[in-house]
Amino acid sequence: MPMTITEKILAAHSEKEVLSPGDLVQVKVDMALANDITAPIAIKVFGEIGRESVFHRDKVALVADHFVPNKDIASAEQVRIARDFARRHKITHYYEGGDVGIEHVLLPEKGLVLPGQVVIGADSHTCTYGGLGAFSTGVGSTDLGVIMATGEIWLKAPPTIRVNYEGRLNPFVGGKDLILHLIGMIGVEGALYSALEFGGAVIEAMPMYQRLTMANMAIEAGGKNGIVEPDEITKAFVKERGPEAEAGAVYYRSDPDAVYERVITVNVSDFGPQVAFPHSPANIRDISESGTVLLDQVFIGSCTNGSLEDLRDAASVLKGHRAARDIRLIVIPGSPRIYMEAIREGIIETFMEAGAVIGPPCCGPCLGGHMGILASGERALATTNRNFIGRMGHPESEVYLGNPFVAAASAVLGRIGAPGEL
Amino acid sequence: MLAEGRIWKFGDDIDTDLIIPARFLNVSEASALARNCFADLRPDFAASVRSGDILVAGNNFGCGSSREHAPLAIKAAGIAVIIARSFARIFYRNAFNIGLPLIESAEASEGLAEGEKSRVDLSAGTILRISDGARFTAKPVPDFMAGIIRAGGLVPYTIERIKAGS
Ligand code: SF4
Image (cartoon, rainbow over all chains, first blue to last red; front, side, top):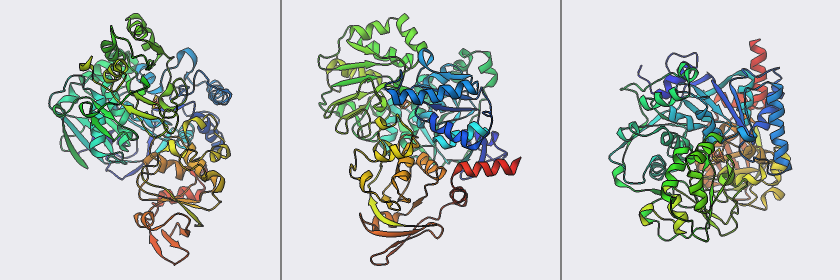
């Protein structure tokens, strides 16, 4: 029976040889992930189950990235719960302090998540790793606690929506715009319970960092996972992660006659950079139709656009410019390695010359945690993934989502705008 | 399983940031989370919701983050069951995993109004408005999920599985 890549990966990790959408299966997990917000509850659940040790100490990653460096006493206590647990169970992949980056940037960078794997995380943007050709999805803390104890999870095999991107990309358009455009088309529950499989000539030519961005936002359309079939670009990415990563990767592709719930074709020639207006990632407008939106803050970072390449993209626009007087420009590299490399390449200098505040690798203001909270009535353009009411601060503040080029240009203009306007 | 209480009515796409804003996520005790449930959207909710009340919403309830704090806050606040036209995927898992039942019913999502007393029969998949006896039907809860609720949530369910296996 023909299968999609999602069905193949799930079947390979279950007792079934073939899988159809709707099948309920018990699935073996290759990597289980939690962060400082979700780990404490998962750890409590793990304790209630009563197992002596975690199912595999190399297959659990705990990343304290949301409220770090600890922003208050309560969050410090949360992190301590995770740290104590990591020590007690000798968890190999525990990250805090100077080792920490945003979980979904850090794990691919370190080669801890690989093509063909099942990765389950207590964070909704765990779907990011689909960019590598893995099956990855977000769950809650109870599911994660159970995985830490048993190494398994129950899953319903999702139907797959195939999205083919064709045509030629316009200037300053990339993965972020392609996924925003799609969410604008199908809505925030357009892919509810389904796998979103991205393909077509545009995706085949797309660099890995942008594939990760696209898979990252599958959840914003309600998707269970986003996925790109691995190819030479994937293999090159894995090769850079070293021989152990190469040995662990398995490259699945969808059968040509695989059955899809729906096939969508998007012609990328039709649009420029996309902006999501408040308060929904589906409230999409082309930048040319965004009107005059004055801003108070621009944030470049997050698991969606916090990669080195994203920073390069933003810096290429900012070089030689300064952020407008009334703009707080905040830049947060996604991982320590990215931060270091950005310093070496002079990108951080470009940002600082443009008047940016550089934050330590973490989620920062993305979820309204700390380091860039908005006051009532303030407006921010962010390279993040969510612009829900109150997402970055006061319930009467507004968040607009865009790509790093647009963020950089908007910082200089003091309003939402395109690099071409500089 | 029966639940009886007053209806709290919400709209479409109620996301997890609205259910429990991130600034309250620096703790994980359910009672503390309950105090801030819907803090920005319905500031009166936490203080006036009563044990056994029923939450009714539109499409895609619980979309957004994976924070289990969202269903935990709602459950600890006293809500016995949530009825919606549809639920976001992670919220759906989380709610059943912690023993908070959800039912999908377009009819009830449209037909029931704020404050109406209603009774929900989970196993039968029926919803009854007490004032006039109006009935609404729901999609039955899948067997597997009902099993998790019967066990008391995913944790007791898993403990049973581990015992059965060893
Ligand atoms: S960067 Fe934002 S979306 Fe990504 S994991 Fe952190 S809080 Fe979540």
